[in-house]
Every structure is written in structure tokens, then in C-alpha cells.
Amino acid sequence: MATFIEQGLGFADTAPIIIESTEVVAATRAEVWAVICDHERWPEWFANLTAVRSTSTPATGVGSTREVKLSGGFTFQEEFIAWEEPTVWAFTGTEGPPPFRSLVERITLVELDADRTEVTYRMAIEPRRGFGLFLKAVRGGIATNLSKALRSLGDATAARRTEGS
Image (tube, rainbow, N blue to C red; front, side, top):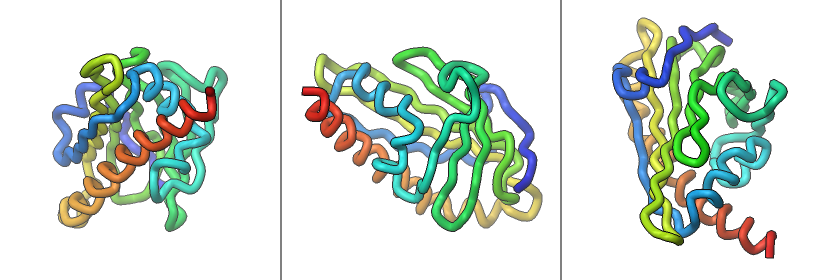
């Protein structure tokens, strides 16, 4: 695992590599926010994640941390840099696989109407020297995975609504 150069929220708009996906979820913004904040259950809807766990108390809010494990054995350590309930959520990577020098991921939620929320997931990456072409080559696959995850987020949100009734 490599130590990352931690970044602020503005990096999400200025990084050398930006990968983004947007989907409309048939749920209220509060319902979507609740699913996003439930770290441990992310593997239920975000393919390639095998485990997510909070590593701080409190588990939510700016400054809180978590660990994310991906299939293939990759692990990321993350620290939240934005937590504006229920509209913006973002973290900077603090440690992870060697291709990354810096990483910021940001989710924004826009209420379209009473039952639909636009969810945008943005990954902002600065690669380490020698990994730029690799990360640019795999960006299409990452974008596809983000789109699938956001569609599954909609399914997870609907399932939780059913669990609660």
C-alpha cells in the first residue's frame, strides 16, 4: 500500500483524470443519502467492493475515516473531506494501491422531484509517475462500474424502503 497525497474538495474539479457517472434514482434524496452513509452495506450495491468499514468515531462527518476493500485484494484508506447532508459527500484517499498518487471521490445528490434524485459519482485521480496511461486505459471500465453501482444504488434504496415498511 502506498501513501497518497491528500487533497481538498476542489481536486474533484481539477484532477488530471476525472471519471464520472450520473443516474436518476427513484427515491427521495434522504433515502439515497441514508444508503450512501451505511458504509458496511456498500458491497450489497457497489460491485467489486468486498468490505467497507468505518475506522473512526464518529463514523460519519468531515474527518471521519473508513477502509474499503476491493476484489483483487486492493485496500484503500479514506478520510471524509465533505459531508453536507443530504447533498454532498466526499473523501480523499490517504493510502492505497501504487497507481494512485491522489484520489478524491465525490457524490452529489440533486432532488429532481419528490420521488427522484439525480446521483453523480465523480472519481478524481492523479496517477503516480508511470501509471497515467494505465489509468487512462482503464477509465472506461471504471466508468461502467460506477454506472452499474449507481443503478444498483437505486435497487438498494428501493429494497430498504420495503424493509422499513
